[in-house]
Amino acid sequence: MTLSFRSRLTVWYVAVLAAIVAGLGVFVASRLRSDLVDRVDRALDSGARQLSSAYRTEGRPEFLDQSTTVIGSLSQRPAGSQLVDRRGRVVAAYGDSVARRPMLSAAERREALLGRRVRTSRRLPGNDDRFRVVGRRVSRSGDTRVLVVAQSLQGVDDSVGRVIDLLVIGGIAALLAAAAGGWWLARRALRPVARITADADRIGIDRIHERVAQPGSRDELARLAATLNRMLERIETGVAEKHRLVGDASHELRTPLAVMRSELDVALLDEGLDDRARTVLESTREEADRMTRIVENLLTLARVDEGRLELARGPVSLGPVATAALAPLHQMADAKQIRLELRDGDGATEGDPDRLAQVVSNLADNAIKYTPPGGRVVVRTWLRNGEVGITVEDSGPGIPAKAQAQIFDRFFRLDAARARESGGSGLGLSICREIVVAHGGRIWVNSEEGRGSSFSFALPGAT
Ligand code: ADP
Image (cartoon, rainbow, N blue to C red):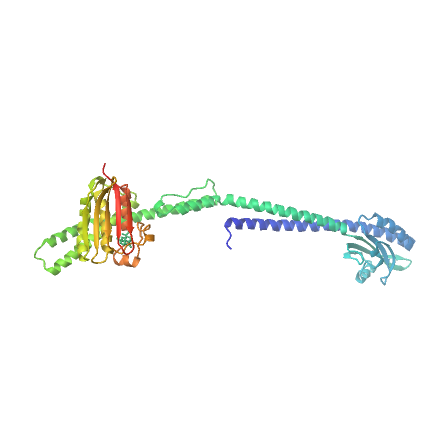
C-alpha cells in the first residue's frame, strides 16, 4: 500500500506524539506510585519504631496493645502487625487475618535478623490485595525476634490506576486531535506543492513560455518553483534555438531546390534527350518536388512554433490554387497508375494562396502515397452554406475510426513502418491543420477502413 506524502506525514506526526504521550504516561504513573509507596513506607516505619520500643520495654502484651493504636492510625486497610521468632513462628499477631501467617519469607527474615531493614511489596495468603511489608529486628532480654508491619497497597494501586485511566483517555483524545490537526497542517503545508505540480503538469512544449506560480514565501517551496522556472527558461531557449535552426536550414534549402527544379525543367525541354536520360531526369524532378514539399512543411512548422506564421492574405480562388498544387503531383500519380482528377466547383475566399496550395499539396500527396496502384484520387473544390472548401478523396486503405481523432496531431502515423517506407514523418496533416486554423477554417476526415478516405477543409467564403 502506498500512502500519500500527506498521510505519511500525519502518521509520523501521530506516531511521534503517541511515543511522547506513552513515555510521559509511564513516567508519571511510576513516579506517582513510588511517591505513594514512599508515604506508606514512612507510616509503616514510624509504626514499626513505635511497636518495637513498646515491645522492648513492656513485652508482648504492650506490643499487642500498641498495635491497636498503630494499625488503627494507618490510613490504608487491611493492615496488620506480627512478631516472628527466629524459626519463623508467629508469636503475636494483630489486625487483618494475613498477620496470622508469616508475612516475610525465610530469606527476608534472616536479613532482618542480621539487623537490616526489610521492605517489600507482595501478595499475602488470605487476601487479594498487594501489601507493603516492613520488617525489623527487636530484642528483649536477650531474645531476638522480627517485628513485621504490613498494610494493603490497594489505595495506591487504585490511585495509580485512576491516573493511568485518565492518561489513556486524555492521550487518545490528544492523539485524535493531533491526527486531525496534523492532517490539516499537512494539507496546508503541501498546498503550494500541489499548485506547483498542477502548473508544471500543464506546461507542455506548446506552452513552454508559461511558468509555475511563485509562492509568496522565501522558503524551500519558493526555491523549488524558482528552480523549475529556470529549467523551463533553459528548455524554452533550447526549443527556440531548435526552431530557428529548422527554420534557417529549410529557408536556405529553398533557393538551391528552386534552381535545381528550373534547371531540370530546362534540361527536360531538350528534345534530343535519349529515353534513359529523360527517365532519370524526370524521376529527379519528382524527387526535387517532394523535397520542396518537405522543406516547405519544415519551414511552416518552424514559423508556427516561433509564433510567426505570416499569411500573405488576398482574394483567392480555390480552383487555380488546387490546379497549381496538383501540377507537380501528376507525374507521381501517373507513375503509380493512379487517376488524379480535379473537379472545380470553384469558391472564392480571403487567404494566402501559397499556404492553401501547400494544404492541397499535402492532402493530395498523402492520397497518392497511401492509395495502391490502379486507384483514384479526386480533388473537388466546393462552395456550400457560405463556406468554401476542398475535398481530397481517395480509394486507399482508409483510416480506422479510433485513429481519426489523432490523425492531425504532430508526429502521428498510423503505421510507422509503412509511413517511414513511404517517406512519411507524421507532420503533413498537422501542418495542414495549422494553416487552415490560421485562416479561420476547419479540417476533418471521413473515412472507413478498406473504403478510402476523404479529407476536407472549409474556409469562410469571400464576403
Ligand atoms: P506522413 O508524413 O506520415 O504522411 P501525415 O501527417 O501527412 O504524415 O499523415 C499522418 C498519418 O495519417 C500517415 O502516417 C498515414 O498513416 C495516415 N494518412 C494520411 N493520409 C492518409 C490517406 N489518404 N489514406 C490513409 N492514411 C492516411
